[in-house]
Length: 245
Image (tube, rainbow, N blue to C red; front, side, top):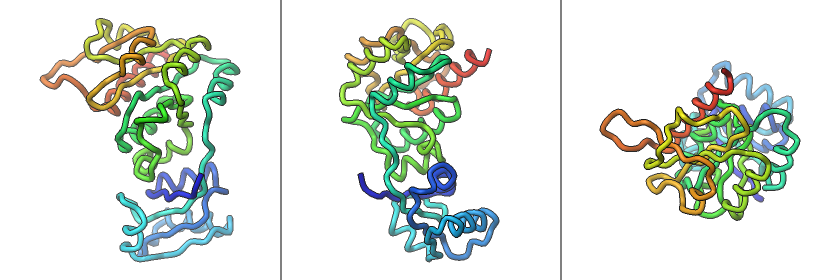
């Protein structure tokens, strides 16, 4: 595991708040003197972390995204293993809510899904190790800090892990355009894993076969599908509505 760069105020603030020991160095765009900058630099001074004001061109050269005027070099975050999540689920006192992304390869979509997962109270996001987006600086930026709060669990064999979840009493609800049941017919009140497919391709056959229930999102207009991160948000907030009720 190697050092990484994160950028964007939400992402940097999230690490500073939750895992300050990971922050090694910070670069801030010259000319900013607002309260946000003052609070972060004061916190960095208290931690003894080096920070420097630099021209925007230097920030642009370090990362390939909209950095908002701040870039941080950080140590690697903790990597969650399959056994870690299964242990957490076994000890849970309340119904669990998980998100499984089957082959989402766009880091923007991964980041957006993490952000929504955090907002909806998801305990962890599960992805296969192969053919899945990495948690890149761009994904962390889009996640707006959620990449630092929601565990991302990479599993070697997704089908096998889905069976392990079922053994733990987790109900697997997958999305498929041709499914007979609607999102609003699904029961999200127990321990549930929402299983979302890849952009354009949907769920793989083996993943689909392991789901206990397949659902579709009712589409009222002319388009026949939604972006995976948008569809994830719609489904997760139906789960939130049911669980709060």
